[in-house]
Length: 166
Image (cartoon, rainbow, N blue to C red; front, side):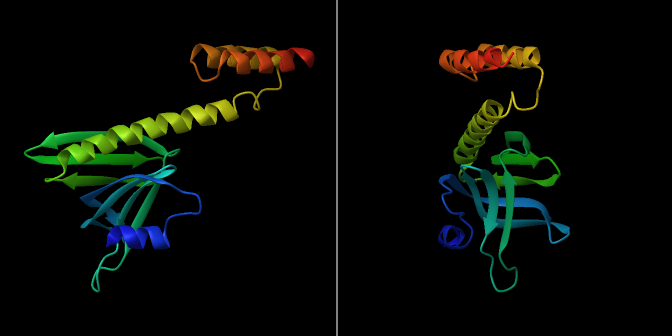
């Protein structure tokens, strides 16, 4: 039920859901610490804590963009699995589950992979725009090649473009 409502009301145009796990989550909600039953959802651009709520509690949604997440911690403790997501400038959220422990652990790994993919794509898109100095641009380009952020072909094409402007 919660997932259908999320899809209908909150999934953005072109956004794809990679994974969802039934879980309790806790964090700052409506100004105070609270714990709710709902979903941990991973899309191609964000991690979402979502519950459709009920007559008394109402709907709750918190989004954590992958570009803003600074840590993802998963641990098992006394039969309960905890997954904590912390983002820059946002209060973190902790998901917990007793029955779907492996699902939360797998979700943590998928989030880390998506974060790495997002950071890789970002560094590919903007590394040379910040520098007007061609030598600095060439150094950044070489670092990107050595870090396998770009292919040899991308390296050579960009390098030749920079050199032609010197």
